[in-house]
Amino acid sequence: MSTIVSGTTAVERARNVRRAAISGFFGSALEYYDFLIYGSAAALVFTKVFFPASGGAGTLLSIGTFGVAYIARPFGAVLWGHVGDKLGRRTALILTIGLMGVATFAIGLLPSYATIGVAAPILLVLLRLMQGLSAGGESPGSSSLTVEHAPDGKRAFYAGFSMSGMQLGMALGSLVFVPIAALPQDQLLSWGWRLPFLLSGPLTLIAYLLRRKLEEPEVFTGMRQRAERASLPIVTLLREHWVTTLRVAVCSGINVVGTIFNVFALTYATGAADVPKPVMLAVVSLGNLGAVVLAPLAGRLSDRIGRKPVFVVGALGSSVSLFVLFSAIDAGNITLVFVAGVVGIGVFYIMPVGVGAAYYPEQFPAQVRYTGMAVGLMLGLLASGFAPALAQAISTGSSTWLPSVWICVGIAVLASIAAVVGPETYRTPTASLGRRC
Image 1: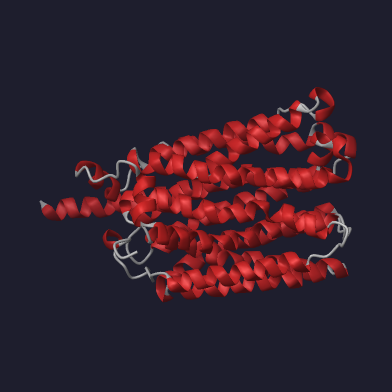
Image 2: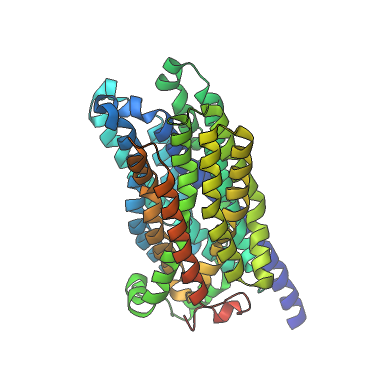
């Protein structure tokens, strides 16, 4: 009898981890497609659609609204972390995808500044805040759920699919703007830019149907049965695991490299350097598509040799690759721009990001895993949100990208140090994760 139960359990676990990985992949793809089409639109059209009365400051304001969502992310982290640690990972993930879909679809319906005046940018910022609130729980929830379903020794491989989906969403968020950016200016500014946002409607429905089939991990259902859930996960986190939270926040600062590549490099290349918009959008898309393939492979490598070495090599390599990318942009060397973009983002950058999908939640006990992963990650991402605006402000007038890239290098060094001083978790059984952090 016990043999049959054991066999059934093994089959169910294999099915659950596949569902978790697939759901994490498609959910994160949609979430970051929604999130990143905003970045492309802010860099290419929002200056004229929502900030035409701001003169030369319009570009800075437009890029600045991209970072507004990062203010809401920590609040979303607390909210969805509480829901995920108290009511269930699945419940939180269904709610986050719904909120993101509604906010993104609504942006596509917004009237322009020419139609309703200052109310247009105000509504835009409010909807962007809703996107940020949702994003505060998406990847932390997907990663936590997958890590808890995955077998020991393959946690980073399966969790890497959430990051793979994230990069696919970023690639699609840029790629969808390639034909849009080629439209005549009047069509681009009137209806063309809206299409990527409206497309999120049916995609959200598909993601919702996928997530309805998810099951809660045994570690969560066991906590619920034993009444071991924290009454206020955020309080427990800050009281008992604040050092781990700070460490994860510093590690996740490496995402600054990603936003500099996806947003500021696009703005700089198509403005100061006069690289054609479709060309740079294609570079961004190819770099992120490379990361789609490499994310689970980077996770699998860390399952074999450890989280720390993969994280450090990727963090330092991705920041240094920005020197090559921007130098190639200045030189107008399109071939080198493509190579630097694909290698920098598609190989080096995805290494710490892919590994982090498992490494971050592994450092917390199950009672606060969702909250800890979410709060730590979102605090670190605050710098990422405003990095493009800071880089744009630094480059305005001086047309230099060097200070911004050096900032990325400094952040990569700090993130690497934080990873090195943390625990090595790749050989720790899932049931024992977070006990010594």
